[in-house]
Image (cartoon, rainbow over all chains, first blue to last red; front, side):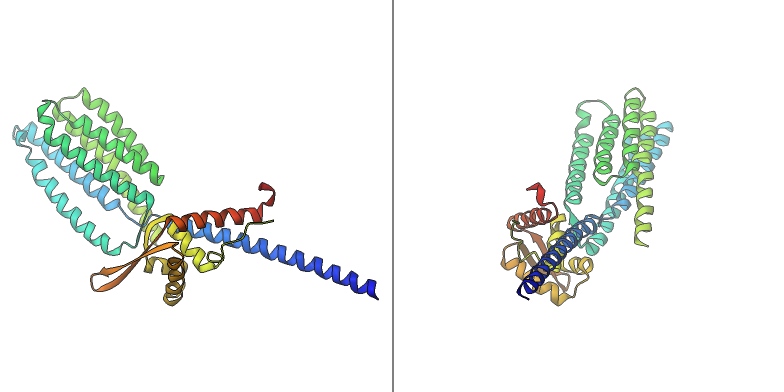
Length: 213
Length: 97
């Protein structure tokens, strides 16, 4: 009888230990799954920046095409194309930014880093465009290189192939524009923003819309 | 045999909140609510507990007319989360110790 009770006790003890181990393993796996799941959802892009790419792509595209025709008709030396379109794009950007700020609930570390990168891009572009007259050279090839650099970093950070291909196109166009005359450089700049901003921006917009559905 | 699991993080909701905050710079209360699908009351209680342990920082302000609560993880919270994940991994792969 005593042997039977001891036998049963050990059997029960073994079952309990096994049950606790299995429950613990299940719980552990559940918790690891929960962590992975939460990180995955939180890492999703919250910030739809496609309107900025499309806006600036279209603005630079339009301005350079207008400037190209103005130069051909010998009215373009005062840069009127840039002076009208770029401030208009800045105003539109400000409106979009205000709208998005209201919706914004969170930002990932990468998104914050990218915002810093685009601020640095804007400041560098401003310095180059404002003071390049001192060098007496056209800055379009350098601007194209800057576009390529920032879209490459953005594309790599968010794993968006269209931006990476766009940046490669921009680098190639930058090389070509070092050898081109001013009006051809304007066309190359228009092509650059088409490949690096407008097309990837539209692809990004379509993807964002599809994810929301 | 195993490292002790942090009891503060060994709750599904608190663990979910910390996991979200690890991935973002800061998150609004509504964002935590949307992602965890928990009730406002429950989240409020849990974030207070995490704040008391200095695992997270809570910032209260206003967005227009409405109150806005933003949460972010602290260094202590990040360390605790790291230790918790390591302890969990040891439960799954005890041989890796």
